[in-house]
Length: 120
Image (cartoon, rainbow, N blue to C red; front, side, top):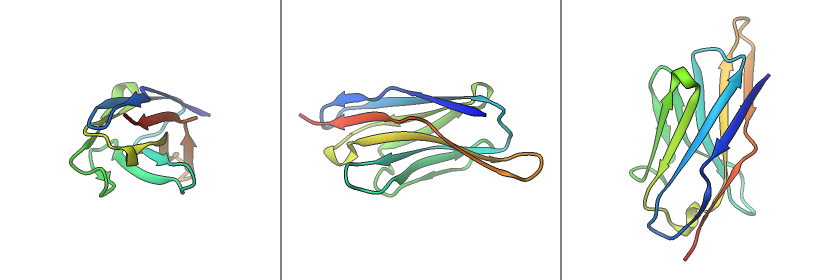
């Protein structure tokens, strides 16, 4: 089993910054894809940014140029640096990890989520 522990959410004013962290523990295979998703009130969960352990990253158009995803593979940790936040970024942010095990079975785990609120 894999556990994901998120930290770093909170309340920030428009234009401010926050850094989210997520550490994965347990039986994790590489390569793997770790990322951040968010769900605003009354909306569906959406991808924010993902990073494969081999390097490639992907961003939602709405956060390009403002958010940066990074990883420390040795620590199975993924970070999301969020700059120039605006109220539309308010949501619960979830960490996710996906990978195939050595039997080619897919695994998909989620963290419990951390609230990010952007408000003056």
